[in-house]
Image (cartoon, rainbow, N blue to C red; front, side, top):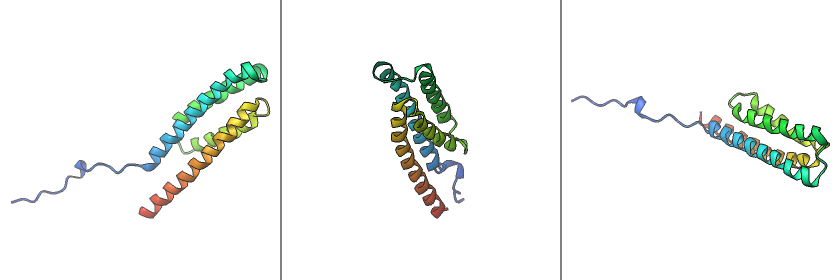
Length: 127
């Protein structure tokens, strides 16, 4: 009688929690880009849009967020995402609504970074 040896290929690979967290970060960037694009509607009706420069700034920030969302698997892309938050806050000097959105999403990103640190700490303690 032969004993059956465990088949390593049959066992599912452990899930990478950082991959899931990157997905949450990418989704946050996509939602932020939608909020930034919706700010165009508010700007044209109620506020000082900063003219063509303000509209261009809104479009450039939204496009940069979408591109960064797809690049988050790269180690440097997290720094780009955080830089976009600073750019949002700074753009509040030209378009006030963007500054407010920047502050709101910066708070969200700080929470995501805290969660990332906790997950990394748990991965380090189990390894």
